[in-house]
Length: 467
Image 1 (cartoon, helix red, strand yellow):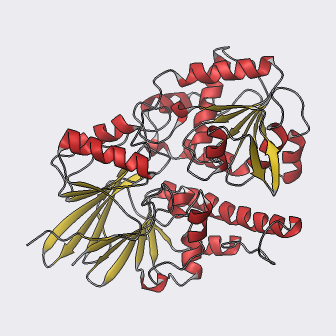
Image 2 (cartoon, rainbow, N blue to C red; image 1 turned 135 degrees about the vertical axis):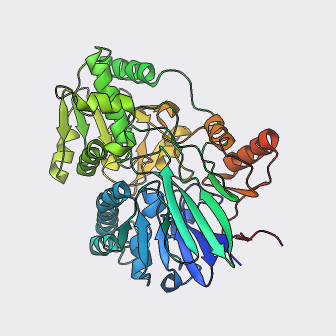
């Protein structure tokens, strides 16, 4: 009897891991890191509830670290199977996973040097070498076409519109001649957004596993260009710098696209724009190269040889740590885009430590900030922020801009579900904090009258249809 066990992203947004078992085989849907509060982060260090050696395959919906970042640890602990994903996700993972490992190595070294870790010899969760070894386990499969993995499992990837390569995953499980279709939404993108195509309509399924990140709220309907332009103009006039914590995948490219438009239309002053993330620039190259995910408008702009839609007029890339430090010696208006997007780590922490104490500056939070992250603390009005063992005063202007979210809002999630050809037999909501998941559950019951449950951490459910 086929079963599904929620080993992550249940009761929380991050740590996506959904274990499917059928015919004596095990398949893991996504393999992400937990991020956010200490309780969640500590789960990354706990042994997985199932032996990694017994997992036969992994399917990736997309490359974000909360969906892929546990992979090197799983290999360290014994996984020897195959990881399936599309070409764009494989290319992004080749950048993101080694970078994740590098950040963890640097953070462990910094903690040891500063002495603010409780451990005598802080260690990273995994190393760069282990992240590189993970890439050798990946096998690229095409989009849209069914791929039979074994006699029990067949998989098909369909566009989810969230980031480059993001997919919903249609998993067909066959036991005793009976097929059961489980549809994992992955992270669903928004409709009518620049650069990427809209999410594809969902196919028929018996069981739906749907994200609920923004299940309790809508995104603002006012223009993101207007909001961004007003902020930049206001902060520049008072001589301040704007720090934008941004994920290297998706958010950085969207911000660069809008900044370029605002510059071309003379809506903002031309300021130095520092992308303090070599990874983000490598990712941007992939966005240009993987044309299969582009929407029509972006395809037309990218085809114009005299116009680069993802490059500002005064663009500066910082590669080394020393170049990054040089930015913090500047006392003139500028824009700093740096990872991570929720300020959980990376170079952006150094920029926040430098800029937060000055009321002329601003921090723009362009997207979801998970519970327990520094980004959430800033969004909720924290007066100080703990960075590298020190309490940094928060005097800069903090500006959440939900228009830039890469996740579908509540009505967009419901719109996507309304495209199902027929109601699923069961629906499970994942990737949401409890308030968001519970709100979406109520909305689905009201609008569709479907059986819908909020998944619980380590809950096991039967997928086989009743007799």
